[in-house]
Image (cartoon, rainbow, N blue to C red):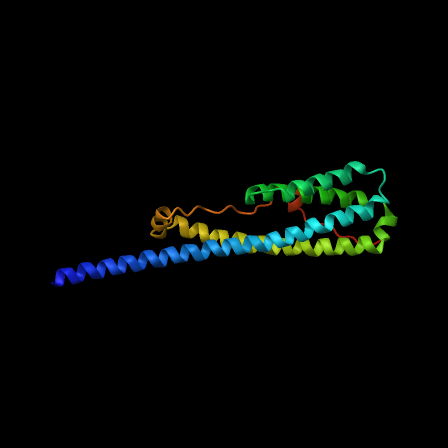
Length: 186
């Protein structure tokens, strides 16, 4: 009789461990998804600001057609990304195109003095900062989730229920690694 009680007790403890580990993995996976949605909101905001910025600049930058087309093309590519890895790469390219755009803008003092342009530039800078914070939060959640999947004994439960590691949202271009230059001077 005592043997049955011990076996049943061990089964209950094992079941509680599996349930606890599974629920912990689900919670972490949901935190990763939530963090990604925060990045997605900020990326959408950036994607919405860029056409306004390009339209404002078109009147001043008639000879910079290629620069404006590069931004538009990079934006379209970023909006069409399906995975975190694709989005990371496409957003890095978009950041590079926007950085080149702001370098070219330096040659157009009338555009730099335009209040609408300055306002859009400030909103874009603010949005870039929010993206950076959201990316940091997302990558932290991915770190917790991936650690849980890789560490014993939760890796056994992760393997049983087919939990997969999440991808980091990484900076891939040198242009994005560089500190952005914001100049409100003349």
